[in-house]
Length: 102
Image (cartoon, rainbow, N blue to C red):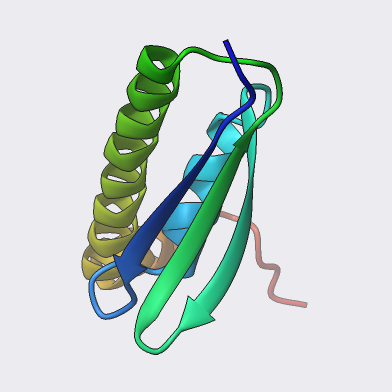
């Protein structure tokens, strides 16, 4: 076993840095990441906190990539449904007695 590092690169036209940060937070107890920009890519250097096998590093790297995709899709869905959510909230609050006619 040895301490290992992995380098991943994500196209910033496809993945938002916020999705990568949220995914990294989910694995904060296993590794840390350093983010940087290189052209149109977001570079992630993953440093594992403890010594891991190569198989372990591959496993967590794969899971991290899946989590990034999940977070990116959540961001897209949130943006696409925002007008509907705002409309629903507006209707919900307009039908309450939160305002007074003084």
